[in-house]
Length: 154
Length: 406
Image 1: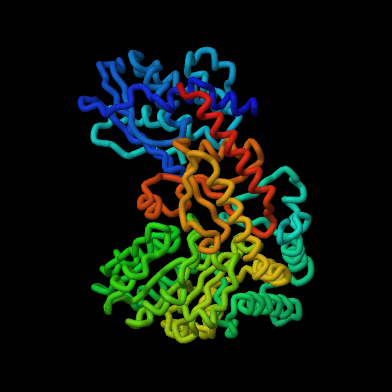
Image 2: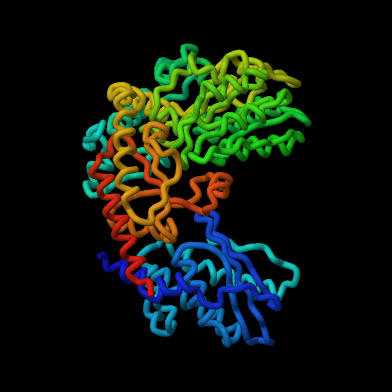
């Protein structure tokens, strides 16, 4: 079995793909945004409940590959209870790790570091970052009321 | 055994471990095609039709020889009714724009099928929206064929055009072209065929097919990217407005109006893509030397073997016609609940190149109740060993995902 595939499809990834956490619609969300990857047909929605600067709840729904689904699931677990600033910082670090530009940040990612294997598969970076882009868009849209344009990683 | 020696294809020869199963997206190119293009630039390059010097004359001749060669290969005696384009997409846009806006009006009907590639779907859908025509989609039978009974009912007296693919890029289904043409012609509609997946794999006899137009892409039939064309009945072409304006396509330009050049120039504005036309001509000569009957028999044999091997994988779901004879060398499937992109990544690590996604056929994917499939497609250089590599890699992919269930 290939080592790079072992790293990409770690058991935590496969587990979050099969049993995604926070996989639900949030009726009382303060913000939401859709993320789309038209080429793959991946599509997900992120809901955020904001309590001032605090992200008090986060959920998602959608369909996609194991990487995009597991990444969304792990993200919801990672940013719940964090401040907006901390969530954005985590996105920056996460992005550096999955693109392979800042592998040294992997340790700071906690369980998100499981997605570090994506850096060996440049074509899958967009799958891993889809949920994060949508999360970012939801935060921005919360600032600019009325803006709900979907984001895309194409 | 392959139908063509792998050594003829530089990319495949340089990558012995590569299992290329994505020829429905684009084929690999034999050395003769690459050599022909290089030779054109080294020996005959000049702007055709323009210069009064010998070299320009040679370029003109080479370009027209290429047109004759491709027309002959596709069974069209009237070579000047073959318009070179960038490929099938541009060909269909040419028809929908130039012919469509002239002939389709409010209240008319356009009929396409559920199998269409976006390139033979969206141009007609948008034409219908532009002019206020009805846009109707003929559904499929349970085994992935166009439902001809439904087509007969859909093609009403106000139908102006039936646009359909020769072969489905997503499922490989070979359509009954003569019957679809008969249904269109019975009420006086034109029948336009998207041959992007037909011309590379099946002998096309344009003059016998009775379709009104046949579009194709060079890069799917061993030729270079950026060249393709459409053959159209002369009567239709002569009555059609030009598609694009510019150099070459004019006769006289007056201050207030312009007259058009003769066919095929009327539909080829600007400096033509001579080198790619030359490459495409070399490609069809290569296919001719193999023999299209041999090509077809090879693909049927590979498809039959692939269907057999893949059906034996538990949890693998096959789409499209059950028999190899009813499809071109395309096998579309899903593997349990593993997303096609994950399957494709795992296969890629084993050097197996397949397409994963909606195959530019979202309306079809919706009807199949899926977002995406994995597609393996075969061509002249593939062998039974490639199918074995696919099956082995799929079994490994399945084990990787299901080993972690718990």
